[in-house]
Length: 306
Ligand SMILES: [Zn+2]
Ligand SMILES: [Zn+2]
Image: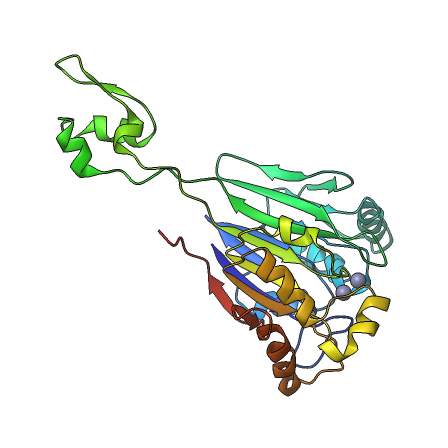
């Protein structure tokens, strides 16, 4: 699972900081989280193209998270896209997309499938992954998202298979897939005898524009990569509460409580110059040492630990 940080700014884009947006690429599919003004430029800088985006997830109806969407959709006239595009967001987002299409007379030659988040928990699920959502607490309805891989099969023990007398070949594959097999002598070898417990799949979580509350950590539980807003330094905690945002210290508390493997701050207030972001990191690290600063253009690879 690859994570591309397209932007880390909150409220407004800065010269060197695009608005908060993150793209996840897995198994050839790309999932875009938020799309503020200029996200298409960030996509170009990251050389990701736009054609391969399978789904776009919009956290809430604040302009810094969605005004890049009409421009991105209009790009379609430049590329030969045939796959439908899935867009997930608050119900009002559909009206925004439809009115933009109508008023701007946008030519879109592929299908847009809109999914209102409303009270849903699971937004998408197939054999390999699930994409979930969770309501946050902000000045408008706002949602967190996670991409979780399904648990992987346990580790196959060659030694045990040999000890049980299972001949190398198709039977090994069947055991690995969880099937029990019968040997030529009539004895049955169970999959559980030679395959270890199922292993956790990778998890990515995206949390932005919310005040702090305990349950965020439950949603982000055991993330391999947690992208989380840390808009303000600790000394502006009152401002953060008033505006229903989090400080870097609060973001770190979520990361720690969720036991996330690595967590990256983002959605920085434009009041901080790049050189001042280290103060946010210092705040965050005072709580949890696996905190990092997300920076525009950075990318990470989430890998299985076992
Ligand atoms: Zn925002
Ligand atoms: Zn907001």
